[in-house]
Each structure stands twice: as C-alpha cells, then as structure tokens.
Length: 524
Image: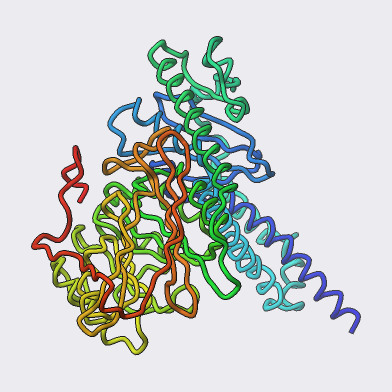
C-alpha cells in the first residue's frame, strides 16, 4: 500500500509539472484576433509585464507597464479611419476612457490562460497514461534494450528527428526594431509639449520624428487632455447631483440612447445612475454610427460602464446589421427581440430592434418588415401578453404608438430624436392609460457620430422609477455643452382615468420617423 501511494503521488507530481510546463508554453505561443481601439488586431500574451502596442510602419510603437507579471503584445491591423490625423484623434478619445478596451483585453487573456491550462492538463495525461499502460514488465524490457545497438540506434534516430524539426541552425534576419530603443514619450516629442500626467508613463519606439508627425501627436495629446478633463469633471459633478431618492420598494433604471460612439459619456452616465440609486440600465440603441466591427470599442465601453447592473437593450437605425445586437448579447446584455421578458423590479418588458437599419426589423423568422408592420406586430404582442406590459423599449417611440393607442402598455420609451420629449399621457381605445417618453442623446450627438473632446449638444440620461411592477415616474438629467448639469423635476406618472384631464395622443404620421437632423441625412 505505501508503494502504491508513493507511485500515485509521483504520477500526480509528474502530471502537475508537465501540465504547468505545457500550459505555459501553449499560453505563450497562442494568439487571438480581436477588435480593439477601432482596429483589427492580433493579441499575444507575454511574461514581460508590459502592454506593447505595435502600430505599424508609420506611427511609433507604444509601451506601458501592465501592472502584473503577465503582459500582452497587440499588433494593430486594418482600421476604418480615413487619415492619420483622424486615427490619432480617435486614439486620444479611446485613451481618455480605456476601461472598455482594458476589460476586453483582460477577458481575452483570461480566456486564453484557461484554455491553455485545460490543454496542458489534457496533454500532460498522455505520458502518464502511457507509463501506466506499458506496465512494469515492458518498462523493464525497454530499459534493458537501451544499452544494445538496437536501443542506441532508436535513441539516435529520435534525437535526430527532434533536431530536424527544431532546426536550431536557422537564424532569423536581424529586425529594424532590434536597433531601436524605448524612450519616454516626453523625450520623443521633444520640449515644448505639455504632457498630461497619465501620459508620462508611456514609452515609444519608432523612426526619427518628422515635423508633421510631431504636430499630429501634439494635437492628439491636446485632444486627450481636453477629453479627459471635460468628462472626468462631469463624472465627478454627476456623483454629487441631488436626485430623487427611491423608496425602499421602488426600482430605478437609467435610460441611455444615441451614444454614437461617445465613450467619454459612459462614466458620466454611470455616475448619474449611481447617484439615483439605479440597479439597471435600458439602452435604446444607436450606440454606433454604422454598426461596423471597428466600433466595438463603443460597445466594450458601455458594457464596462454598466457591467454590474441589469442590462437591457435594442438596436437603433444606425446600428446596421446584426453585429451590435450579437456583440452586446454575448457580453451579458438582454437584447429584446419582440417577446415579453421580466424587466427590472419585476415589470414586464417588451422591445424590438429598429426596423429601418439593414438586417433589422425581423420578427421571429420573418425579414424585411416595414416600420408600420413591426409597430403592428409589437402592438399585437403587447395586447396578447398574459400580464400587462409595463414598458416597451424601442429606439424610436413612434414604433410603440400602436401599443399606446390600443391601451396595452404603461410606458413606451425611446430616443432617436436626440432631444428629450415627454412624458406624455395617452388614453387608449380600451380606456387604459399609458405614457410615451423620448430621451435625448446620451452621447451629446449632433450627427451620426459623437466622438470628440466634449459633447456637441446637450447630453441626456433619463431615470425611470418603478413601483409594484409598473413605471411610476421619470426624471431627466441634462449635461450642457458648457459642462453644467440641469436636473429636471421628477414627473409622476398617473394611470387614473379622468374625462376632464386632457388626453394627448401622438399624432399619426405617414412616415416612420421625423425629418433628418441638419447636416446628417442618415440620422433618422
């Protein structure tokens, strides 16, 4: 029995050592194609404790401390930017709010480490199993055969095969990067550039700087500083806002919409949500400008900002195709698809993507439905629900007009107009009272894309209060372009039927939405 235990312990020790060695080797040899910082990129883990970004032949490589023993190398590939100037400014905006990119890279590296550990554990079992299956008798025969000419020949052939496969004599050509040194960013750009404190830790390696490149880098640094200051100040101020405090039996939900890639507003929106005691968030769509893969940085950012809250969303007319919906769903968002689900506070929730974007507007397995057809189907779903629908979440509140006219929901919410409106009380044809509310653009977007060092128009986060499973109030919080907040009054929603109360029904329109915003024909 003691010999068995010793043999078992030895087998476990050998397996553990092999599993660790193989796992580390697999981990360091692995790579993953991801989209980060608006680029196609290839990520490779390292053990040098740095984050190394290889930007290509034009811009300098960048390096900073990873804060842990495990580092990463990111080799940037194609991107959608039309100029180097635009690309550098985009880098500055993303660097100002790096939480989304950092969370994505961390999650990818974590997945790679877990997969490498599993593969190492499985591969390490093979030699242990072979050892056990061969048995002591056969192992004795093999040991006795080693000193013979046959054994020596077999051993020499094995070693020769290993040498041929490894090719230790093959030398790689000397690389240009081998002759370059890492220097602090301040030294690289030269005197006269006032670096933000966060940027002082960066090191760069690249060709001799040209006057034009220096001017672009200076502009990007200036953009970074302005963006960081504006949004950081706004987030700090938002945390101090005096907002309506919910009762113990009430639930608060933050409503965001029309972010249009402005990740700078994400920590501001979260600070508003926290100040109001929100435990969930509704995203009414248009998180991107075109629904392209390069805009994943925006989706990573909003996910990181609200990661620990309940998250529900729909896609807007600018979130073209399936990319946005699928990407957010894979990251824990409940993306509404025309079926009633249990929402925050136990309030039944219904929603659907905007049908005006390419690839959207499908209902179950049907495709190509018009705005009016989707609106009618949405109303059918609400009116046939077993329990009265508390909230209909859509990108454009007009999509829920039929729901309210039939009297089948308490509240229809959306965005799309970039300007807040409501709440407006509506009495349905069945006598039931509902409300419609449109929130403003959370990204402060004037056009289809809102990336910038500050907001271009008033940015809005709306707060919805629920009690007893239905919406009971709305409060609007606006951030003006000068950085000042305006907090609206909490508007209570009434469901009492009163013949003397003026009833307002959204005017029927022949078109699915309002006219385009000035300067942006695609905005609506």
